[in-house]
Image 1 (tube, helix red, strand yellow):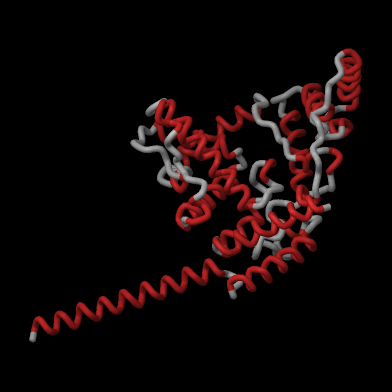
Image 2 (image 1 turned 90 degrees about the vertical axis):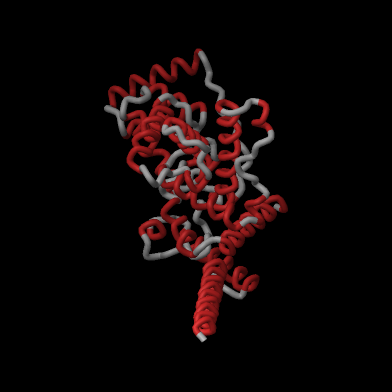
Length: 332
């Protein structure tokens, strides 16, 4: 279908863009981050996730500016200009690295960013944190102890919902992220943070994300049969309308690290257990080929950085030599 071809083309462009503008090491990190980031981000490309992170940062900046500085000026300030991500290497790198830091925590971007702003305000910082300051590297333990309870509270109260189509029962393919999400929901119910019946009603009937029989693997048989009987009775009396199923494309089931240049590694734990490892490897080779054709390099960002470093060193040596010659002239 033409629509699918367009979606694939955009994903490829996203992968090539990332290969052109970020370091090989940071691209390789995406393989690990695909296992830690919040579930809704595990099937979108890293560059798409970075743009989403930037949007959430701008929203948070305006919200906190309105609440703490000036109501009228909030519509004017930007915090981060999304257009500059395409043209400003520094802004782009800061947003990319900040997004990776957020992915390490497993939090939703808006929750991570708002927690960081609130943490900065409590510490009476004069300015709101820039993207590269959101992780508070000068007090990492305090920052972790501040954000973690807030995030756990959001999860416990059911304030966070995973909406990506890849987690639907109909799209289940046994992918690592899909299995992780199912374990996450069962763990939440098993911990007593949410009742079994509530979890079964919500995730099996309303969202159609887990087969109801999967809950039997965590419950005593008699408890499961009792909860299921009550649930079926409630359904007959008050039918739960399932969420509408969006259109699914093959790209919707590509993990976030799928085809990312330099990320595939057959020897790694992540790739060794991934159902799509072979396909990912092939796509990664295609992306590297296009990257090589466009830039004459497989690591254009790293090569450019090394070239600029050499140029700076050359200029530094030239200035040092000029100073030495000037000193000799002064003595003469």
